[in-house]
Length: 581
Image (cartoon, rainbow, N blue to C red; front, side, top):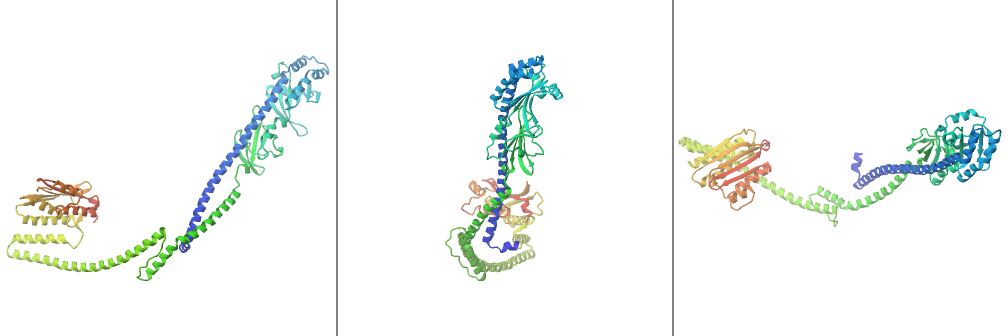
């Protein structure tokens, strides 16, 4: 794979890289969009079933309350209460209970049934009689099941409310039961009234609430999760393994398909309103989403490939010329130029290549001249080495003759001078051990003291260990010379003090004299690195620049001087830099 990538042309590398970036970006964005869309559709599904549940529940509850009000009106009706009082004192004999019920109650009940529209039938259950009437039918029969009657009337208040019973033909009968002894004005009457309703009328809001284009199914279910009514076919009632808690949304499988369901209690009953929607209403179809996304991705990739091929062919044309010219340079010593009128980055590259070729040509000439100069310098260095040996030999001869002539001072000075130059010149090395530099200063100061007898004194103290430290060769001698020439010798006599000590992480070298001092303007120029005319002070600026070049900006040279009092020069060098050479 690596070899294939190395052999691949740049334009195809661009194609692969851009396509890969586009694919990654497209994949990440589609994953994000799919996740966001799925969450949004899921939320919309929850809001959809929540909306229809809330609206339907309110409407159904209003219809049920109307029926409950009608049932209570029937119970407290004066004619019905009068009839019950007669019934309670056994006023009727034989079949007169039926006859009086027809004359006293039937018409009143029928009027109420006609007014409501929700009530299909009213059933009055008394101890010995049962009366059933609709708008057009009236039925009376003797109560032969006293056991059931006694069971129901034993706990009248627990039997108040909405109930369901299944008739012989499998039809569900929905009714509201009101025990007479619990609500009526006459106490001691055993019995109840069942107000049977039309389900299609009471639950009409469920059917009317959902538009035909919505796939929302609404069911009224009893406490046993059995469907009582639905806005669709009752056979489509979902088979749920776990009925969701009221107010909670649940997604689960039902008969091999995934549905979202939610329930809500119908106030005043033990029933719940169940709403369901199919999977396509709250989940995205991942397969179709991927197919559509790939189709959308394929088109920009094709356009991208064509655009890259066109642009790279245009952009790489100067680069191809550059490669061709470099091939010519590689095969010969000719320095050709690239001809282009392009002003973009590749045109700039071509122009800079031309400039580079021109500079290389010039550099080759400079290198040739430098090589010639190097050979000449090596020859001069060789000759200088010969002269250096000649100087040492001459000094040795002077010392020998002085000893022979018993000129001890001449011998001492010539020996000092020889040792000084041996240390000062060395073998051409840039750095020297600090101990050797201090020794060099001793020789130099001894020579100067011999020169200025009774005029010059010096005091050199090394207050810290300096083993392992290396400094630039001859870096201190010009400072001492400056102190002697411009300080002490400007007076009849004087003294030079040299102190080497530690100052934190720095090694401090302090050179002091008690001479005539320097002008304040010169002091300011030296400390602020300001060039000034004249040779006086030039050596200090030069030394300061050298220190910064070799030891970095942390190195410092501080010049302090007071007229007619003396001068102090302090050099500070990082100890870590001194031990690294």
